[in-house]
Length: 113
Image 1 (cartoon, helix red, strand yellow):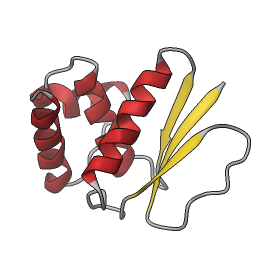
Image 2 (cartoon, one colour):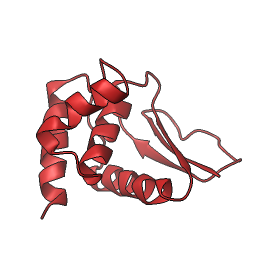
Image 3 (tube, one colour):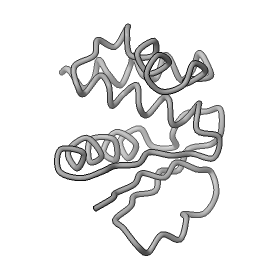
Image 4 (cartoon, one colour):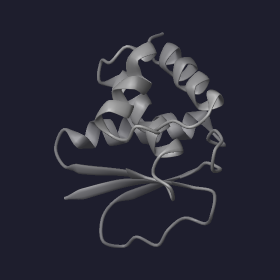
């Protein structure tokens, strides 16, 4: 089974073959709703225990990398190491903007409370 989290600024993709969740998130920016994005990332984390999970955006680096960094913190990677971890294990240019880095830090601190 495959589940996916699709991150885009356009209309939700038409995916009929597997469970999916769409997060409204402009390119090179932050999600429109932090709560929705975090809920989608948590859902991906929980599903990954029993099935394959895909997290994707159009370019595959900024938004995807940011979501993967939050996913890494949920998995136990310290927030201050999450971007480096994603860049080492996923893509060397993942997480493209300072705003995305700060968002990862802010979300990670909220997850710990």
